[in-house]
Image 1 (spheres, rainbow, N blue to C red):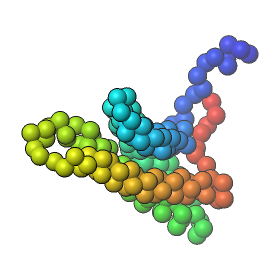
Image 2 (spheres, rainbow, N blue to C red):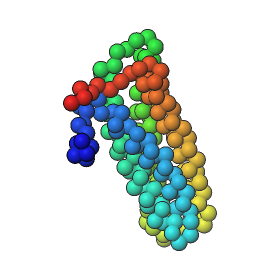
Image 3 (cartoon, rainbow, N blue to C red):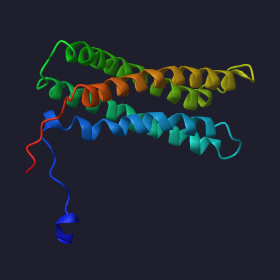
Amino acid sequence: MLGSALLPPPLPPWDGIHPLIVHFPIALLLVSPLFVLLGFLPKVGRGFALAGLVLMVLGTIGAYVAVESGEAGAELVTRTPEVAPVLQQHRELADTVRVLFTVLTAVWAVLLFGPALLKNKKLPAAAPTVAKIAFLVAYLLCAIVLANVGHLGGRLVHQYGVQAWFDGK
């Protein structure tokens, strides 16, 4: 009995793996701004800011995988009049989230590495701080969109009973 508990469970097929994958990018993308915020700390901030970028990159890659696996799983969903509009909105917002976090990740990379590239340019001293605060505000808005995607996915599962296919072997 204990021996089988130490073996990894079987992976579901691609069109059923979405529920297993989707929680990772959500968690990574929602925790990233905490590291960005800690990046404001003097002396140790750079390490936190870089960790935030790594989390954003991993979360954004995870978002691409989640969207693709969700598309595959959506092909198997029975579209009732109640499910169809919620599924469509979930799909559209998921695509939007993927784009938003791709842009946010690129912007954060520019904010981190841009000043070193522009060190010979005269920038106002407050410019990097103002840009980072604006970034965090934009991130908060994108995190709300991400939360709405998760909420719609939760409605599909818990309100309408949509399930991923898995043969249980």
